Image (cartoon, rainbow, N blue to C red; front, side):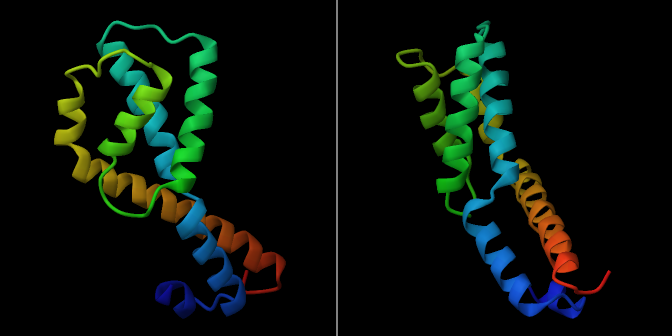
Length: 131
């Protein structure tokens, strides 16, 4: 927030957009979950039907909106797997995702912050802030 304030954005727009973005706009997380589940399914030799892909998309968006902005994506990923593939054991390839969770989580957070910053730029411009 301090960086955006130093850049001269309207404080009211800044506080609204970034506070809302920090709580419900988890763009990076919403992109990570489907990619990870599809990769896990491919590692297990499974093919996703269009119905499962649709369900995965909806569950991922809802899970990302309800996710707290704390590190660690594996726990929620396990829940999403269980919702999309009930009764199917989680593939052993989950260990690879757990091993790279820390750096991947940083990329997910960066994607989320870039998305919130872009919305801030657009709304600030519409509110008459700096170009």
